[in-house]
Length: 511
Image (cartoon, one colour):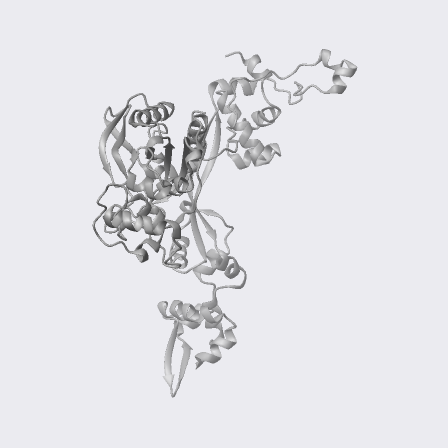
């Protein structure tokens, strides 16, 4: 390496620290020698290490320090000493000895225990009073300082391995009590010159030899012409700066919304809390369907019931019981209005689709709507399932729409989401016919993964809500499952673990 070139690139902090390394290596000693702040010395040492001038080593040591009570007792002595001194003249009621010693109430039992363990006191009951008396050993102890008190007067913090045997004995006793001593691991940094560093350090390094910055005054007077300027160090490590940004799932949500908006869709909105009527009955889900059970759905306790749209209640009732005018037989069972009134956390965003088409008129068609909203399912949390997740919902209301159009919309969406291979597979859902599941080919696992359901709303859904039978293409997709591969996340729970490192380093969504 070119020593002159390295010397010319040294920062002013490095120029001050480098000569000190000929005399000392410990961080604290370097700080004292240079008069710099700790953060300045650490910065200079890091830069010097990057240049191969020094190596930084860390020694881990066990350090003993005083806690809150330890600092107090180091000044006024241990409470058991005060109690022992109060009974030097003879036995007395424990209550009187406590008052005379002036120790705290919570220290009394601790002091008695400490003195009894050393056979320094005896306790006897006379009448209804408990008397305390110093034993001969106790009187002897009161005349000299205990090992524990001597230990507390040492100059802390102290390295554990430097303690003598009797000091370790005192420490073991004090460790059994709260808030007197504490032992912590301390990292001691030490800087050592490399062979190249010794060569640099032995060179003449003038702390003021190079100018660090060019000022307007120097330009104005021309003083810069005969000066030497510090060279730029283009290889130096610089701290990473993490700017503020949206959560990566929010980025994905905004991207998905952009896809549908660009395709001419309008966004739907609605409440998280819905009645069973809108969430299930309006979608022709039978009232004895397993999805309505508590183990699948979060029902609201208070208020338990909501209001029903009066102009739709009878149509939905007849559709469920006998098919109404839909040419269906319905579910051939009695429909309960009280069950339909039950409030719940929406189990899918298809409830928004039902509410949207219920407001439509013939002249509003054709129309396209979407939502990217939160839904709730009473499911067991696992690597692939959440009980609270985002559903991507879409509907197309168009008298000329058909199943080919549905396939086209879904292929277009998933292609924009980064999936090259998409297939539609026959399936069953209570409110669509025909119905289909959407699958994509997993890029790394090379297998088909199901990401959502789709289909065309049955007449039992559209006719009671719109008033006429019209094709309504519909789909509902799980957002989290759709973005796991992009973010290289194998466990769906990791999308929401709020790990700071993950939030800083995860790649941005493809905008």
